[in-house]
Amino acid sequence: MSYNEINKENRKIHSLKEEINMKNIVNIIIGLVEVVVEGTQVAEELGMDAVN
Image (cartoon, rainbow, N blue to C red; front, side, top):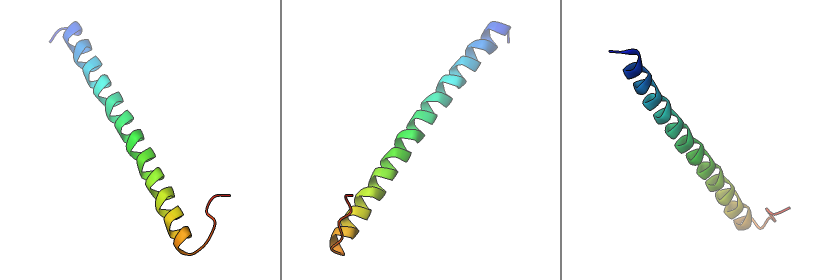
């Protein structure tokens, strides 16, 4: 394998890692939103004002 081939493969791997990181960040944000929504629903059921 030449240096250029290795470099090309490394760039592919780096790109895939960045894509995975972005997907993970999106999933974390979605998870946080779900927690807030569920918490708000529970608070409403308990008759509390969740929005301060």
